[in-house]
Length: 308
View 1: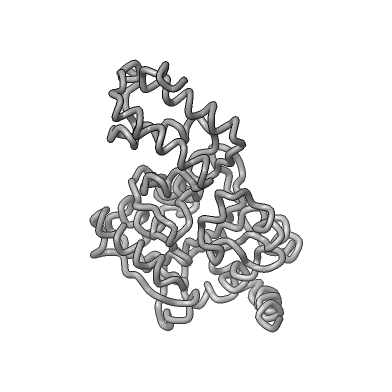
View 2: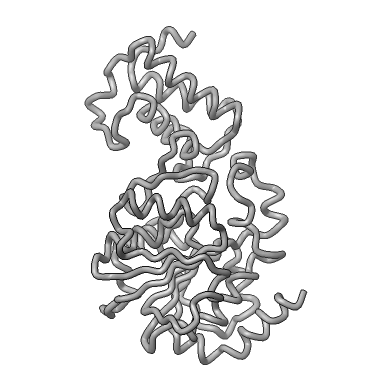
């Protein structure tokens, strides 16, 4: 009986057990039931996400217990990611508003931002950054926050996602250095040049999307699918990026599991696959000079996709 639950720790443990018993899927900011239960309990209690463990034995009132249980029941019944239930997601140490207008922020690129893009930056000045497929704006806004001398253009094809990004830019006090642009990739950026282009475009195959757990059905499908091998957008970005990079500029791009397909298509291109604290995550860095060297091959593949 839930009446036997007394403390914060009791409720966190109970929620995790219920989530595992219900066969929930995790992968939206948190990758396990215990962390997601913690998120929901602390949200229901209006407590900070980094609450000291000292408070774990604090007892809940009857109203607080009811609020926690209501969130647990919604998570199980609706199969909605916890970040959509709380309206908040953490990325690069910052709190972002999260809702179904955009994917839940979860890219490993957060680790690069917090490191100010070193060592890939190699000490270069970064005055202008472009974030393609910005969604709710997490990469663009976190970059502006961690690199306070930088101006960032944040591009997306979804007007609703850009509206969420605008709210997040205001929330995190960087709206004066983050310009939101409604554009199909580079289409509305003629004449614009950047020291760094960073992008987490859609890269999931149609077959993979069809097999995803129910939690992913709440996210906009347009933020996930990119053709049969997940590379339709990535190839266009690789083709067009050199025209928008400064002379010593570089590109960082996330392609996830489509890394293997990209290497098969362009084995000669010197992609540098970045190692993260948890290992390789399908994110590469490449210099403008290398993109120019292999431009013909890349352009041919991109054109083939566009003609289908």
